Image: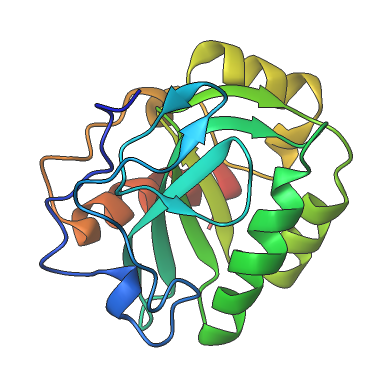
Length: 189
């Protein structure tokens, strides 16, 4: 797992650690020291911690004018044991919503497992972005199955063309346009 790096080709466009409006402003990543791990697997030092034991993220881009955020994840999303959604919602999303961010592109190709529990924080997140949305892209089939099994697909736009979306070859704006088009068709706007 130490070789799985967060996407870095947009670093010249945005770095959360240098954005004073970001919850990760001032966050320091080592370039060489591997200090974080998921269970007994060391992970690449460029992933950011939000206090979850098994889930790390990287904010790849934020557009405050259009109101969207692109986040890449690594690890196990575990609401049942670690209540990861609470950490994500309270320590991260709650800081972005007042900044006008109401559309979230969540890159899930490196979410290795998902364990659901209660939906309270998902309910809250959806209520707080009435004109926005949350979309997962490139989730693994077993993760989609878990989301569907617990009814969390009611909170996120996922599946279909979002399961195999090529996103690394374009700009953040192009990715947003692709996802927004799919979301618009599904939500009927």
